[in-house]
Image 1 (cartoon, rainbow, N blue to C red):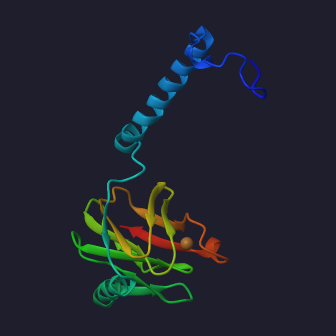
Image 2: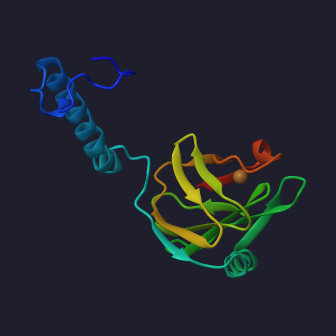
Length: 179
Ligand SMILES: [Cu+2]
């Protein structure tokens, strides 16, 4: 039977399955099931994509909440753009926003303390990628992503935008300190 010409036998689908055909269907099915179960497995054991919550929030509202935290807990500023470094109390709600083309503000967290980290975007989709630990979260305008974080290693981390967001995308690098 050719694939171009119409089949010579009109009732071609009643032919018995060839063994090779059956074998390939079985292989494809098993592989599809492996990929399917890898998703929940990797969520639990991969330690890369965190369990998060998402809520609707307007950009203005999120910016207001971020600014309230910045005004209360800024300890110094850094870089020539004077980005505030915020040291919020352990256990509190902390905010980081993404916009063209910066993460704001710089957060300074305490080791082994838990925080509720809220992430949102002011304009377009951005990707929160914490390096070098390789933790990734999508950051979308109109939604806040909330994740409970407990930093377990001191150091200076970079927040790299992982989602192409325009001409200055490659300069969109934020900072996060753990002390
Ligand atoms: Cu971005």
